[in-house]
Length: 293
Image (cartoon, rainbow, N blue to C red):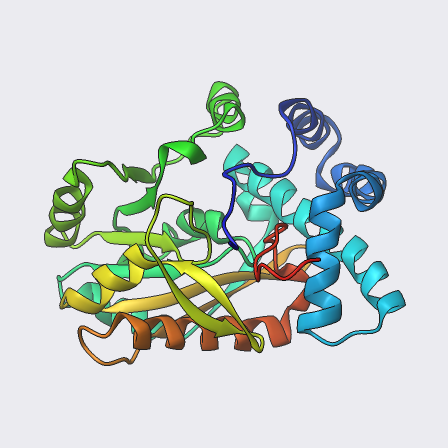
């Protein structure tokens, strides 16, 4: 099945090196090292390279040779988003600019005082959202990221130890379903609940829908919950446009109430629109479509 194993790219030593470069020599120096790091992953991250090659060759229809070079560019793009996240969290967000497409939709949702659900994906750089939301008065609300214990890794503990702090709260999915009460409390306080809807674990329920012409599995929770609650749902993506500029794209989901499959379909359609503009920022380096021979 096209499930994620809970492991992200990179290691603690690699993060330490990049953080050192950012603090001592600046973002550009970290980008320079990335040329070599991306080359390393191209040849030694076998599963990740196969998955990315499949995405470019089979799902986007690029030639074999072209797809190989595009994998390198994808790794390079991924590394840049990680460096940017470190830099922004370390207090260098003024080094970056951004623009917000459909900003008014999100403002109107918060004015309704119902809270809201954000559903994003592992494309672009969603994790920097909170640092830019705080610049806009209407977005000065609490963000709650719904996650699992498997995603709390050594790397996250290290980031906390070097003061890359976040105001984002985490709602941990638990077997006793107590996380549902936490979500309801957050919504009643006009807070935002955030899901990434494109990775699931073996023990989780899933729904199936086409993405880029082939069916894949998606975690059911975000779509079952979102389709039943009477709160606004926004698809949100933060895409890197240039070295120092990000584009925020927000789209309110229009779907049949209590129809999780329809909500999922609208979600995959939104991802496809984003990837047409930013094909190198698809960062699921595993057998997403369960189709790699």
